[in-house]
Length: 204
Image (cartoon, rainbow, N blue to C red; front, side, top):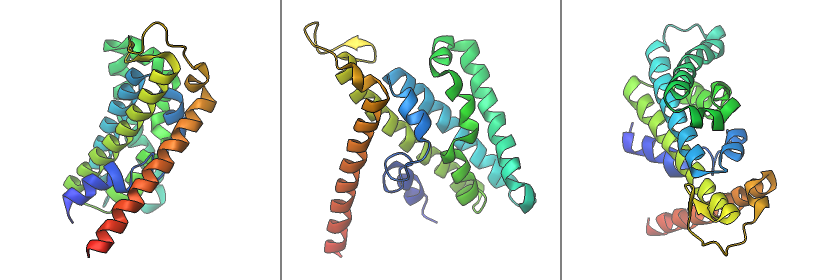
């Protein structure tokens, strides 16, 4: 197994947000600011990586009939650690993310990687898969949040960048704006992906 391919699949070819379109609830909800996006992304990277490693370690010992509940317990353990850390050391971020931190437990991205990859592969490839998928998720969140924050408020990471005269477009920071921007990103990503694939096939 090529570990480089495993890692870059999560970033680009199999990006959980722009290609797989999973975990959309948190994607649309927390991308009102880049700060929230980074916080959620870092949490998902940690949970995805750690849960993949533990599930890979225990894959031969978990009975097939109870594997999904076992995955949920493992994932919930790491989510609880994240929640306790944020609550203790970054309470402002914890308050901003709110309910979406505990909902990482049932995030389709985490469960999908546990079932489709960690359950079938050794520890190190599973760790690389968790890191790659987590970073891919985080990058998509940051791009979406950057566009929404800049257009919607004229700021980026809380700092004004478009001047006081800029008229903010409030709808971009709301649910309809999130859907519109995400749709455009997915469309653009697919167009670029098809062109890259066509060039590779043409080169062969």
